[in-house]
View (cartoon, rainbow, N blue to C red):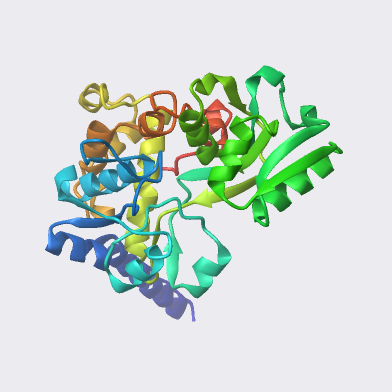
Amino acid sequence: MFKFAIGALGALAMLAGGLATSEVQARSKTLDAVKARGSLLCTGHNGSFLGFAEVDDKGNWKGLDIDFCRALAVAIFGSVDKLKIVPLSWAQRFPSIQSGDVDVIIKATGWTMGRDTELGLQFSRPYLLGATQIMVHKELGLKDARDLEGATVCVAGGTSTERLAANYLASLKVKHEFVTYEKTEELRSAYFSKRCDAFVGWGPNLAVTRSKGSANAADHQILPDVLAMEPESAAMRQGDDGWVDILNWLFSSLMLAELNGITSENVDAMKANPPNSTIGRLLGVTPGIGKRLGLDDSWAYNVIKTMGNYAQIYDRNLGKDSPYKLQRGINALYNKGGVLYPLILD
């Protein structure tokens, strides 16, 4: 009996070892298809979704989502030149991923149960948390939503945003008056003409509205209150866990670089003299980070060198270096008062 038990344990150990080896060597089918094609197909927008996917006056794509598409192309090919942006409407994005017209959706896409269970999609870890917030005229001197007592509040009528705002202000016992509009243009016009004191909407869109709708964006402030939260994630076809792994570790590597102060400017110095074993592994000095994903060991180094860390990407598209000046808030790393964090690289 004892010999049998030892033999059985040995067989299980060999089986586990074999499984672990095959898992390390496993490739993503999508990754193989992308490499065979010689290009990555990633989502754009059919127009300009400001701050996320927009076309500048020279016809070049820019935006947070576009930069993450570029980062993925660099991780795979070592260059942004292999990226092809496919302009899509919101309605087209899910049929396009299922048909293979794109390899991944990086397009301000919320991770919902319906999409996860009914559309045949898998999602990466969230790369951004989209908060429903409140913008006000700065001259009113308001600090947070509790100061909206007796205020008129602009909100899109018949939407979930209206319900969220009503519930939130009710929970604070703040008396207010809603001014509702169905058309976005009318809603913005009402706010900027001061027919209402506050404007409720998705935080990034409010930042864009503030920048584009006023001669002086500093005249408007976004209050710190968070009425609701939506995790924005990359969406992929179900059944390719290796592809999901690549996206998860792409986003995590950018956050890990920020956490450790690694930027596009100092990454070469960090690689030449890594301060610790984690940084050595991240930058490919210690082998292994690439083989596990079917990529080169230098993939994360290439991404950081080309695109910067998470903070650099955020700041130039939505934050302090952009026209929109949207503060990081909850999208800061955990050590800066936010909720984002890198996964453990071992």
